[in-house]
Length: 79
Image (cartoon, rainbow, N blue to C red; front, side, top):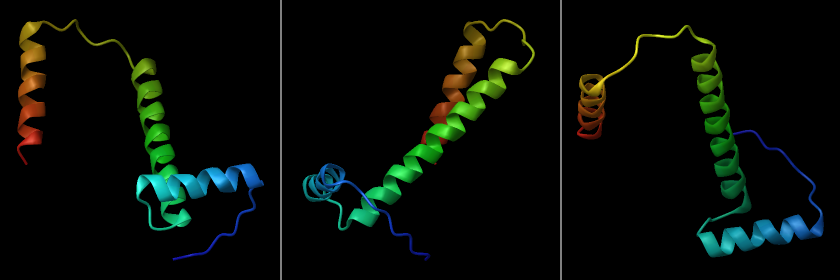
């Protein structure tokens, strides 16, 4: 694992320390890693939304289509 040192103003360091102690993180590094992973997920979602918005329109969907989506989501949750 690589190491990265960052400098924080006292107020931000205090905030990070509070998050570590109150939210059950072992270290400030663990907290920062989770923030980065969440940001990566948001960026991926944003990218997918932009891609979807830019894609050509598909046909309209109906109740059968919604039911098939619900079935697929249910199947994925069973795994």
